[in-house]
Image 1 (cartoon, helix red, strand yellow):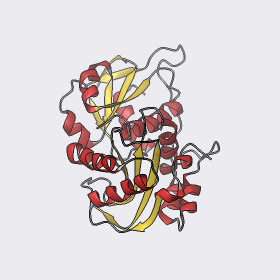
Image 2: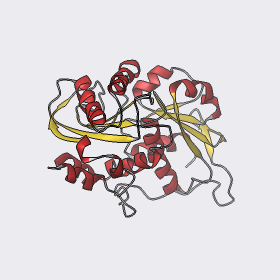
Image 3: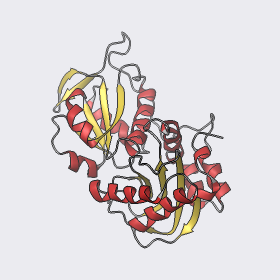
Image 4: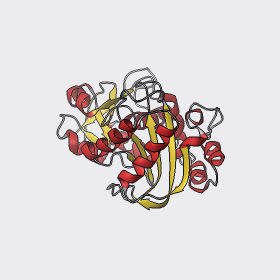
Length: 279
């Protein structure tokens, strides 16, 4: 059993549920965490408050939302729930609405769920596995789709690795200032979400897959962080990767901010990073 499917008990899976709006959809997913003994009702309300404060950035892929909040005293252990809605609902995310799949994440700390989110990124980035989640007829079918294991398929749409400037002599890549001037890279990219615990880690995982393809993993570090930390650390980084909603919250941080709509798309992240690096 993978780190991902092992965090989703069958009792925390509900198929073809009815929700009146996005708050109701999050409450359905939070109620499953509560019923499984993963987190209490206060955590469900915290997940809703996150969206009210930061906007619908938790809608990280077409039709998919990853609800989460900072750990509170009601979180007993790290776990996930899965809800598939009978009719999709709008979260207010133009790029990825309407949402039919909602997963809720509760974590005891910032590290306990990193492997699970890496697995989830691979699942959602693989069309046949996403289709299996959309069409599963039982909780066991959902778990089978989430079970990636060591033999998980890579994104079939991935592009070949490009030639890497400076890789042969193990020098850092260069970044672009404006549209043409190249400057030495600081070796850091920040991915940003409201809490630094959920969607920013998800985006980090997908971006690292792009670096692996490029052969740039030894030269760049990608760190997940929250909006407050990102404002203070932005100038340490070459640029930030985040959603439209979080970018609006951040405002001008003194370095470029690349907007990502689909956090499962290696192609979209690849294009954003090529925009900033001399690839």
